[in-house]
Image 1 (spheres, rainbow over the protein chains, first blue to last red):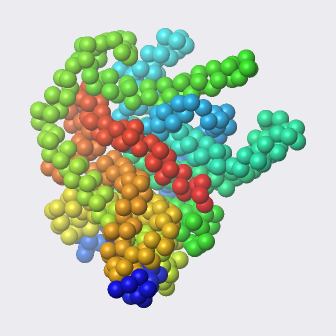
Image 2: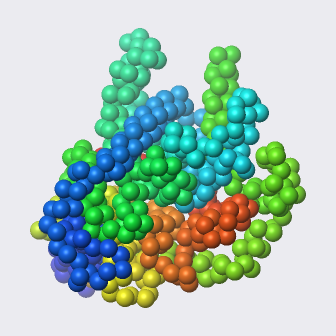
Image 3: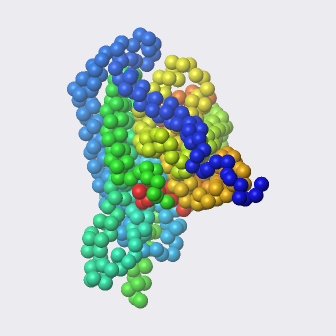
Length: 302
Length: 276
């Protein structure tokens, strides 16, 4: 054979279906099937311990019940309030710090390594650490609050408002670095000519930030924002460990509520109906991200 | 010159403060795990100056819980998940990056959509399925679910790396008579090591840390480490030293990964937002 021989096949002509089938099957059964099952189960009145054959098909009763369920509205309110505070504070802190610290300096990579550590810690462990820190008796936070600021010791996780503050604080600790890292990557990818040009035109630091830099990384900011909103709707592990959603339902996010409905009050059918609501919210937000950026859609990207 | 010095001082002060805030809670956990009962009962939080002891670690290793079993379960599930995800995710990403086929755009979009499926949504059907089918290999079921959950992001990451490899390399290999699988394993795979490293770290992170599905699907002997750690709170009363020892053992592997592969992790985190 010489190199002038005709190739038997071309890179684009192999049977792609053979290559994608295993992954498609796994994702189909592991992710899509549960979503369809959630829709299906939401039409049944089914509890843990009862045979599914005995479950009664109830049509839209679960959905009607959901709309009139004050608990569902309450946890939706908690979720939105939680989302509002963590996202407002994380975006402000993350973007602010990224703007202040974007200049490449010596040791930057070590600092970045340290900043992403909270993101690598298992949610269960995050919950355990902060449950300890906020603990009323053994907790370190009470110690410093009283010794440094002269405040009375608080039962942080036993008071609705303080517990809500605690989970917001914990989320900020873990996720602000995520925003920071993404925004700093965006800022450093900006073409330096544009920033320099604005400098020559006499723009001060504030003008540079608000008229040049932030507008240019707008799409990055929006995607980070959407990812965080989705996370707020998906999250439950940290709260389950720290507070179990309580006291009352003051820290019970939508995902945690579904979990408790299904496995504490054992109403699988009704929990599925609320899960359908969650799916719709998350898929709606995902579609927005998809519209803004899907690197796999076009062939032109390198 | 003077100004520059002042500016740098501010920079480093701010960075060191932030680094302390990131590290402090993690250090609280590690130090607590090394303290004996007496030190833990003290009135003052002690950051550094205490006599470290391995008592808590001994207690969880030799205690009533089967720690070695749980550790082994976690290793098996995380390892198997990562292997399967990288193997099949790599195939899928390769096809998406290199070929055109009917349904390609749909698959690309669907992959990104299912990436966001909330764990709470998977929980009920997964639990129902395992309950109704009477599967008793919990770890296989768990591995299967983790693989499905990890695949979309792994495919997404690997896709970007395949795109960066010049297609001429494959063409040359084909002219030399290589089959599709040979091209994939002999030509592309060696060039994809950093891509697989990034995807592997993110997959390990999911499989090693996941809690909710593991809690629902595993029994007394098939628990993974996060479930074992959480159960310490309810079953054994709140023994902070031991709980933190468990937490430390869970966190050590990801922390080591982070120090060796921080650049790749950051690349993975920013891939979605910055490139798009």
